[in-house]
Length: 546
Image (cartoon, rainbow, N blue to C red; front, side):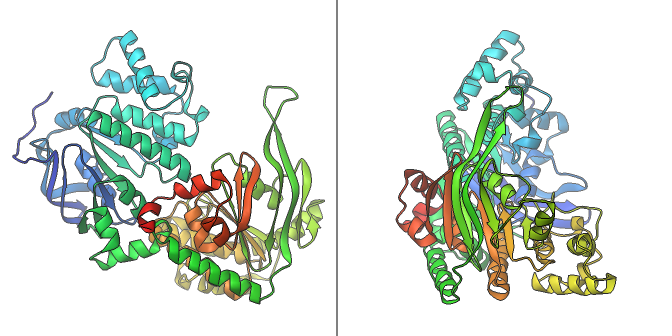
């Protein structure tokens, strides 16, 4: 192993007065952080806080004009800031393993997963092909992949999101590093899958005696899974200590804001808000359903298997009351997104019916008319907005499609919509790439309201956002519902968010409804064991209860 410049310190990883610049601008300002052997440490903060920049600095993989301008990063006695490129290539993988955030973009789609794990082993010095194959199977089995011998010959797209994340964990552990850096490894996963992945990662770390540096924006996950938490804001560590102590007695105003904004650690207050909102809806007499789903079935034909089908939705019935929010909750594969497509008229049910304002999507004319009162807001504000359009054109697009108004009236309408979603009017001529994730989602909401829509279908609309931004968007949705009498069909895997927004909840599993009722009722007295499992999987729930 290549020798590195040495330094004296007892911790496995010791960061002292770290400063990082992008060009001439300093973005990390004197960060101190320590990870001991076998310790699990979390860095928590919103987007732009500097947590991922610190991670990139440790690995010496700062993008673009990023460079370290001061301080030290001492790993097992060696200062990484003084190491040359050859030494750092030896550190990455051998001493520090990385579990990145998005398995969809961090696995080569054209390579079988076994070959990708094998590449990591080959880089570690395991040259013998037979030994490498055997060790690959062992790592996949250790990572909890069923039938590892068969599945080693499959491509990433043949695995679920949770299984792809397990493959990344297997690759990170292939060289038996001293430190694992996990960068938001479960942010895109369902809560139950997230819990299983984090359980598995914790077990592997404990079994191998590996240290863990966990990068996350979720204080609930950090509190449940780590020994110590460092809270970052604007490139500085503003609080550092025991996670339970920080959650119960935060010293910094920013930490208090993170705790207040995180639905996973504000359960009691969430139920109280639901109760107040439900009483408000009842007082308005909002009993007439705007959306009625009656005994809906959706079957899909299996490609290459004549006559065989798979049932995505199995005799589902529920309703959305006018002026209220119904949440449909379940893991990936539960059928909730298929229901959203049917409600939008993008898919036709195999059986049953969907009525909006008492009418069905029977023909093209009916679909066009109904789509004026039903609009979607999708999960990814980066992917759902055309990057070549100005914000004004994005928002007024529905008006142009339905030939409503002239250029002047549409411009006035866009300005009014920007006011409604609390965006400055001067962004109208900017493009989506110039906005933050939260601002983009506000643009998507404004576009959904352009036609004076009565029903908005929100498909995982806040799951890709940091907790503070998520909190702001949820508040905006509540305010718009109160002001405009909007109805929401809220598709999500996150029961903690449901508590913040919904009045009624439908719990789905494998295409069927397993539980349905008022949010307060379902959260406090769940009737089905699957619902109980979803509630138990909410990060930070145990600390809230205590």
